[in-house]
Image 1 (cartoon, rainbow, N blue to C red):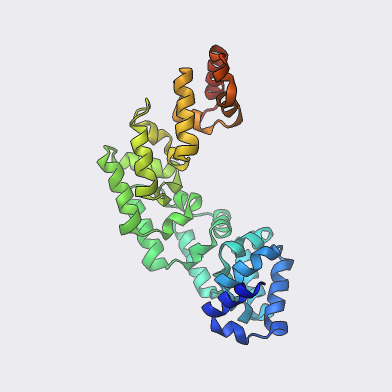
Image 2 (image 1 turned 120 degrees about the vertical axis):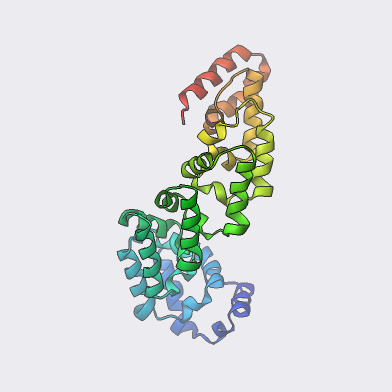
Length: 288
């Protein structure tokens, strides 16, 4: 680790300065490297959770990992799991089990519980009673399948109901969508509520109003909000408009290389009819 990185760790957690280099720090670092953690990721992990070096490998870290593997964490993904959420291995088994029990209670299968813990290990940090359960109840009030949402987008359950979830719901209701429409959108695209209302949803909504697509298109394809407005949505729409192709939003946005190649040059060199046919075929073949 670089000196500045070590200073940052000590600033955040002064007790780190008293850890034995050979007895505490090196064994943990070597253990992480053996798990496949890239050397370049070690400073980030220790900065986020320096307490890892104060925990016994044989008495705590390794048994906790075994416990989590029994709960379904993919042992082949430990390097990624630890990098995503270094504090995971410092939680008590009681806390880990409480979260897992909640996931089962919500209807997740054992396989999907393991996938959630592997993809979004920081869900362990959310309080079951103060965060997870109220969020689940909120989505149930929208008639959303909570088990499906937890599996597809567990990070949504870390958002504030008042500051994040309700404003997004109200935004769509104000635009004329029903609660059923909103439920369909979130069921089809779990990450919808993770986007910023002022920085993402509003600007893309305003651009949608300038396009030929009906508002019902968002119910069918809420993934629209996951694409970059400047890098994907606007350029693709311009291509479709100039080529006179009336395709669904999902078709024009999901297509990658062929459509970009058309935009890069062939249209501008007078082969309008050919490009029109190519793009039309591409978009017809790309179904949601």
